[in-house]
Amino acid sequence: LERRWRRMGRLNYKELAKAKTKENRNVVISEAYDNKGESVGYVIAEQFVVQEDGKEVNLFLKHSSMGIIDKDGLMNMYKAITHACSKAGLFKENEQNTK
Image (cartoon, rainbow, N blue to C red; front, side, top):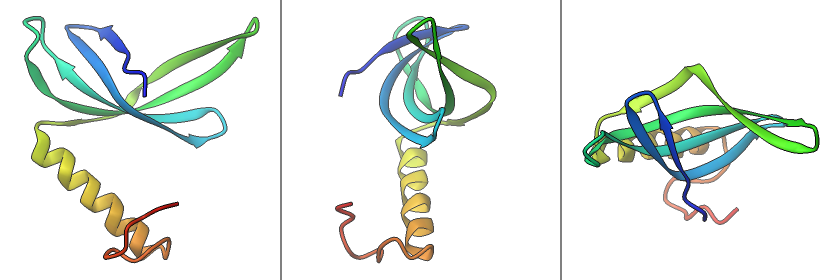
């Protein structure tokens, strides 16, 4: 996994994970840092991906992100997604997801 740094506004973001959710959309999870380099939490954002002049252009959608304050919040998001996948019949919560 290549970790990328991005600067947007007053924060820097280190990409932790990215997954395709639609043909032209990704969900990106990043850790956010202030200008002193201290972690201030996590962000889950939607990224729009297009091809322009043969190059991939990635744009973050302004009003489609969620801030998470700390590792506990990130872990709770994981638990919620795991529970939702289980409810949707994708796997049982007590099984390891190997798909």
